[in-house]
Image 1 (spheres, one colour):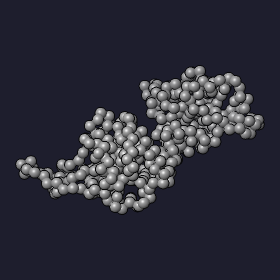
Image 2: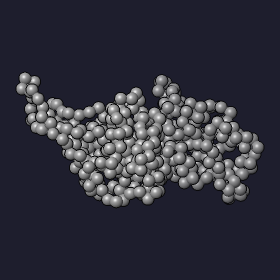
Image 3: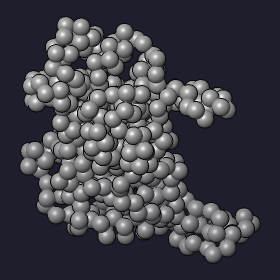
Image 4: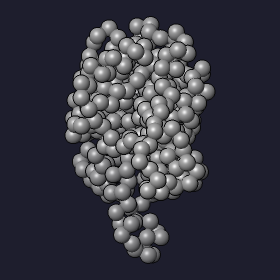
Length: 403
């Protein structure tokens, strides 16, 4: 997750440093943009040290003015396309007026126009400025455009007056950003164990049996769980994906290795989500050297460990277990049978032959099946959105006292 933090020129600019820290504590990467006025109150070095990133202060930096290049000329577009939200705190009366009227006379206001990410503003100003009809009209314009306004608090202001205009509490602004990003705290008491990806069962030194799983669904579940405050343990087969920051990552190549890792972490987990595509069979013998094709007429296979069955035998009464059923025919019937046989709290079924579902795509089409016979079909959506919907059901199960 990446957020742009715009800091405008006001005495409350120092609180933006606290906001940056609050965002980072939830795994959010922050790109700071400062107006010229902001630099009169706090230095870019402060934000650079806290964020570990260059602070953007001008559309064209002094270095790019001396040596013009395409990268510096379109930096605002690159930032606009890479962020999931833009928050401006403090937002001065001047910044509010400029963005309300579509001006783009510095990097921050240019970014507001260039990005399609949600925009959040946290105003801070003198009480008379806040109550001025022009300011309120500008705020109403921004609200109509979908900008989220975090209203200022009332109290003693730096100018000596008392009334509304003081920057909202850092916790309040951060909560607005987290809500926009889909970050919640409803899993903060959970330790979530997620499996992802495929397994590879070796035949010889160069060949193995596997499947087409990319791991994207499992990694989306790990990310979504972390966004909702959980401690996340990700047991992953081979993938080309980068794990979400802050999760405990355990690699596993074979079904045997994945089973060992899952059972090692099972006791400390309150929620287990088995999204990995574990191979059902492996070669009965793994050869140390490459087998010559002339020497093979048949490859004897044997069953791998049934990890879900072992979990069903060992799970505690307070643990929730979610399974996945990737099918090509009789999808709901097969998924329901798995739900019963493995004593799952929820099974996620998907027909991997459908366009936009299954392996190595960024979307999925699933049906959620429950032990009481309920079924809930979801339309095609991103795998991260599917993950959030699955976790919504987990939260509801917890609310009802399941697990």
